[in-house]
Length: 264
Ligand SMILES: [Zn+2]
Ligand SMILES: [Zn+2]
Image 1: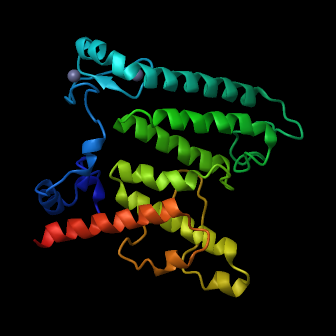
Image 2 (image 1 turned 180 degrees about the vertical axis):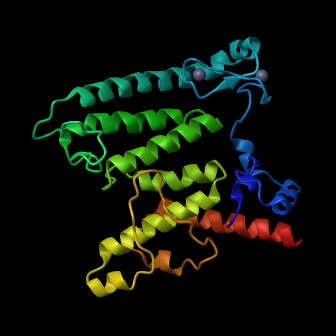
Image 3 (image 1 turned 90 degrees about the vertical axis):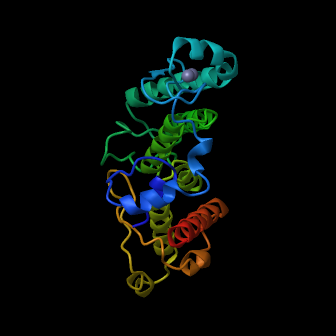
């Protein structure tokens, strides 16, 4: 397994590979530099309080929040506004009794709406609001903002398996920004298998696919994929999008850099 989280400077989740960590610490660059993990103004980590507006920026002191306000205000207000809109849409959709355009209990797992949002026109205002909320979150360059955006994007994919809004194209990039390269690769691999099965024209084609494709009911993907496998299969896939190919390339480039540092 490739522990890219360490390469990004975040603590190893399982803390199982101290050797890799030591090497990565001496690497000439740190890809997490662009993402703020501490105080939004000074970068200090430790005791921080959360901005009450956007809820995804943190400060070490009242002073720094005040000083930063002029720069942060526009983005913060945008997030707050889009969150309020999204919450209103969610309340409306949850309360809807159901008709030909809107499934009843739309969010209920196993219900007729779950996984089929967007196909029901009544769910679209909610899905659009959620997309715009993600868009607003990504104006703020902090780890909590990107983590929140990723969670929303994954959940939107669960709600709408057809993915009319293209969440599959931004999810790999969000994983990369968080330094979660293995998860990025898992996702790309998982989607690739899905597309491959979708495009199979015969049962024989399906049988020849090595990996079984499963939606899963919690977080996906459900399997750890081997990031060292060749990319040839991905490149043959017609439905693989450019953003997905870019993310795949970046994962491979990071692996190459890490391995060079490791064997240096
Ligand atoms: Zn500070
Ligand atoms: Zn804020």
